[in-house]
Every structure is written in C-alpha cells, then in structure tokens.
Length: 326
Length: 274
Image 1 (cartoon, chains in turn brown, green):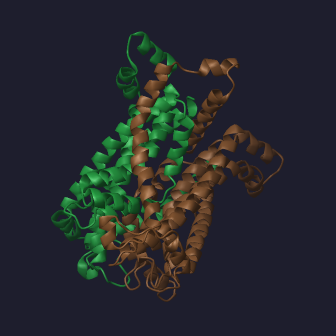
Image 2 (cartoon, rainbow over the protein chains, first blue to last red):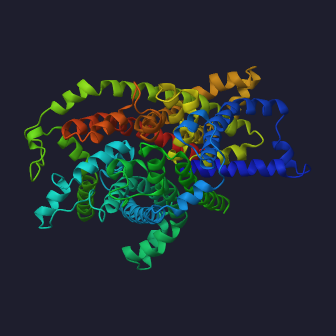
C-alpha cells in the first residue's frame, strides 16, 4: 500500500509539472493528450468524483454545520436549529471531560505507537532471517489485523474479566493478585492499550519487513567483515536505512490510532468514570451514547479530531513526497 | 553446515513460540466457544476444551443467522459499489492522465484520514432526512466509503503496469475508451478486482461504527451488532458470544488463505512493473 501511494503520488507530480510548465519544452507538449482523451478520462473519473462530493464532502459539511448550531432532537429532525457560532466549541473546551480526554488520547496514541513499532520492528528483524516456516508464520501474524474489531474487543474483554478471565488466572498462578482490568479506573486505559497494541503489531511488522527487504545484503556483509556484531549491525545499518520506512509507518500509525473508537467503546465504553475516554469515544458518547443526544458538541469534538488527523496527514504527504523525489 | 541447520531449527522454534503467543487470544476465543456453561466460571479455566460442547454454535444457528445474512448482503453490495466506482477511476488515473489528477489523488488520501465516527455523524444527519436510517442500502453506501479510496489506489497501481501498446492496439482496432476498458483493461486486472473485492467485503463485514450509528434498532442489523447486543445485554453465555465471534471471523480466515497470493500479486504489480 505504501509502495502504491508513493508511485501514484510521484506520477501525479509529473503530470502536474508537465501541465503547469510553459508550453515550449518538448516533453510537456508531448505529454499533453488530445481533448477527446481528456473527456474520456474525466468520464471515467466522474462517478468517483461525484461520489467523493456526495459521501465525503457533504457528510463533513453536515458535521461542520452540526457543530455550529444548537441542535435538539426536535430541531435535528426539522432542520431549523439556530446558528450559534462557536458556542459548541466553547462548551466542549469548558467541559470537565475535555482535559482527561485530551490526556488519554495523547497517552493512548503515544504508548500504542511506541509498543507497536518496537514489537513490530523486533519481529520484522527476526522474520527477515528467512528460516524454515518463516513465511507461513509471518502470514499467521496477520490474523489479529484481519479480525473484525468487535471480535478482538470482545475476546479481550473476556480474557481480562476480573473473576473468570484467563489473564487473572495466569497472574494468580505466578502469585499475583487479581487485577480489575476493565472495571478499575487505574487499569482501564492500560487494558485498551494492550488490546490495541495486539491489533496494531501486524501492520508494523508487514510494512517494516518490506522495508528491511530492500536493504542490500552486501551492506551487512561489509559490516560483518569490518567486525560489527549483530547489535552494532542493527544500530549502524538497519536502523538508519530504515528511517524513511519508519517515518511513514509511525505517521500512518498515528493517524490510525487517533481514530480508534471500536476497541475502547466495546471494551470499556470510555469508563469507568471517563478513565479511558478519548476524543473519539467522547464524540460518540455525546452524539449517540446518551438518551438525550448532544449532536452539536459531539460534532465539535469530532471536528477537533479531524483537524488533528489532517495536520498529521499533511505531514505524512510531505514526508512521502520528499522521499519519492529524493 | 550442520551447525547452521541447527541454528535454523532454533529460529523456527522461537518463531513458532512467538506466533503461539500472538495467536493465543484467537485460540482462547475458540476454546471459550466450546466451553460448557457450568465450566465458564471455573477457576482456573480449562486450557483445553476437554468437555467440549457445541451448544454455543447451536445458539448461533438459532439466533444469529439473520444477522449473518444481512452482513453478507451488505458486504456483497459494498463490493459491487466499490469496484464499480474505483476501477474506472483507477483506469483514468493510470492510463488517461486527466488534468487535475493530482487533486483527486490528494482528496482520496485525505479521505482515508477522516475518523469513521465523524463520517458516521454526518451520515446520520443526512440519512435522518432521507429516511435511510436502518436500511441496507444506506449501510452499503456508508461502508463503501471505507474501501473506495483504497480501491482507487490499488487499481491505479495495477493498471499502470498494463503495457501501453496493448491499449494502442485496441484503439487501432477501432475500440473506443469504454470498450477498451471493458474488454481489455478489466479482464487483465482480474487480480486487482479480487484484491479490492476481498478487502471491501472484509471491511464492510467488520464495520461497527456505521452499523451502530446508522443501522441500530432496525429489522436488518449486521453481525457486528448481533455480537454487540449479546455483550450489552449482560449476557453470561460467553460460549455463544465467542461462537458468534468465531463465525464472524471466517471471512478473515478465508482472506488469509486466498488473498495472500492476490495481495502479493497486486503490490508487486504496482511496485515492479512501473
């Protein structure tokens, strides 16, 4: 997926340069297609363009509109809610849930990323040694990533159950008392982080593994001849050469982790007492989780999340473009 | 020689052990799905389903079949919609080079970064007015937003690998762009069609956000909601919950066996040929 984004980006850069350049240069004129082809091209693109407008742009616009009006259930149906400007945003910033949600979102994202990346990298280096069965085992590692999130979340819920969970049974076997993983405020965030790390490791493994494959073996041989041991080879060869792939992996992981909603909602509903609430679950809680929905503030929280995701998305695009050009 | 072979076996053993740890939750799901009700709260729990029962799976057959059917219909609908939208777009971006392609590419990339919960809230507002809440077509359209940007990406990468001479030959033989696409490009892109279809199906099958916001409470609820209701009702029949989870995981298992090849084919086609 990485490869493919890079390629298409690279190409579009070319096209845009070709079209934007002044007419004289030969390559640019050669590249210009006759108008009939342009018509055909946009004919093929039209469905997806209309689709993007209707089912991405319009819901986003409606969401923005929601966040700027004072909606009640009645005015939601009738569509005559009064315009209140940034009142919903002010309400959200002043809400006692705001600070914990911010802290939890930051903690959840950074801790998940750190563990997913470290474990993924370790496994990628291990599987890069090509032993018997390595390809099969690597494929099996994809299972957690392919499972429906509700399946993973409910399995982890039962494994972490205070009385009957297998995790507490294992802890008991080595002499540690039971932990209220999902029902105590001090452990709920850790629990959802554990489950989410488990789900995210395969993605990191796959992308970093493909990055390792592109490091030429001759570099390792040269380092070995120079007397570098395995750890030094990792620090001096693998890690620096993997930096571009690592940057992409971490940025994509960041964008994905900010969005995580299903896992947390299914396992803890953001509780107990908001102890595992993030912006994603808070937004859902406001809009759909209560008997009296607060669509306006819910949409406002969601839009804050969109802004953060898009900022990192832009960083991602820039990083990728720089890598594609260099 | 024998020493390196021995080291190889050590690595394989470690690899098997690591995979075992990683897949333990999956094993546990299977184990619990086969556990009898009276053993569910046993401490310590049985590590093997020695007194295995299929009671959980019988409950799935009794209660969850309509949910599974709905998910199947929604999944297939999402596949058709996704391929129909993204294959032509991929062809245009890969081979016809329209002006403004850069903008379309950028919008597709940005679209993938919008959190699902935000899309869900927007869709909710729109569907409420259109009366599309709790409807299967509504869920198909919403679920397709998960797969269309990915689909365009895969088709673009794959179709860039089709030799230009082939398309030129079709044009020389008098085929218009539509015919070239339908009779030449699409048949060659079979692997990309399979890859996109499998992932579109998997994502729509697994979707929980749209299901719970747009599909909840209706006559046709997908399987993710079936499981969620089980948990939410404070149901203590964990063998039935886990049996449903096992059944809901089957598409993922199928994809792991089948798509391995297709995904690899798709990625190398994009990466190597260009």
